[in-house]
Length: 346
Image (cartoon, rainbow, N blue to C red):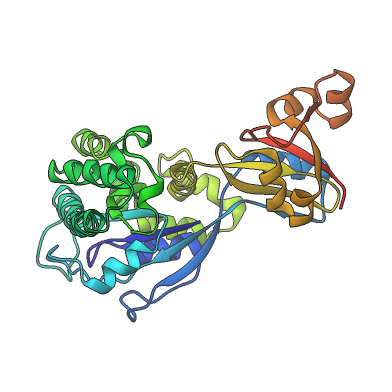
């Protein structure tokens, strides 16, 4: 899953990327997208690993893309290249500057940057939707597709992002392949100074994010980078001294994971404890295919233990003795935290 980090020049976007990935990408370097893979923190994986003592522990992962800041500090206009790079992402994370930057003459204006970015995305989407509508009508395309694009056009003309419209109302299939930016899930990251690292989002900004269908949180990228550089044993005390419950980047990664409507199921054993990422609503046979194509092809059944049930009883054997092991077929919808053992034959 790819999440694109975007932001106007000086927002601290690349510092956020470096804190997450540990890659140390130079700020303002080059015009290419930088990629980094991040593990999704999960206390359930920690607990399972402690119990099974496997040779390997694998967390769910997400890929973050640091998209070059070709949109400038003046918040005027996304370049065609930047638009194309943003369209290639499955979700977007907009970094807003909320600190003084000596390199910039303008003071921080998070609300203004949010509106400027939103307007650029709305206009870019409206251009695509109107051109597709014109072509669809000339080609006498499927009336269902035409109706969907008409609803999209009307929504954009009312200055509403497409993500704010329920999927049941707008439909999903007709928009695949068009790279509509306001249809993408959006996470907004308010990047603050070190002195304000523990402050929450301002209520007015939180209200505006809710109105545009976005999630949001606040952090200080330099502080998070410092936390990431500490030894694991020293992090908790440092975080507590700042008045934080946990590193903000852990909340950020979990929020981004949820933003894409992703869940995790687990496989366990002495060789590996592993979290597998799937879309919410995925059925058991398709989930088995995430592990290996042979398991999907030869699927017989899934033996399922919900994590909460496992945690309450302490072992697989205790769950079985309590009669709580679930035996499910191919159409079972896998739930977040399910522990799966796939029976198959090929």
